[in-house]
Image (cartoon, rainbow, N blue to C red):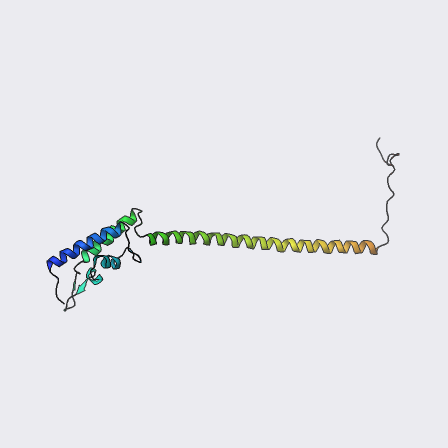
Length: 165
């Protein structure tokens, strides 16, 4: 494969640096990300030029723009560590991940609350059923036995017996 001229290489490096500055400033093309693939497309160079090559004897040699790819990755990492989000999709992904974690926590709490309320409902229903059975038993016992007598009503004019007054 023919080698590129120094003039072409310099023009390509200038185009890559300009594209790098635009991408790192957040000016992403539609459908693009802040990555090497988009950098290569924006600069108009082959993406493979950013990666190491192999000689015919199998030894490795750096790609013509590999140093620019490494610089791009360093600058991107520095921006991310500084808290600046270059790619809005990455910001959206992080926001959605946070939202998913929050929703999962809420679901776990609601499931626990639901289990607690279900247990309470079961206990309440069983207690009501036991009370109903006891009332029914007492009613049937009261109607079945004839030894229940009514006490005479108390008279208002006389003091009850055993009064201390």
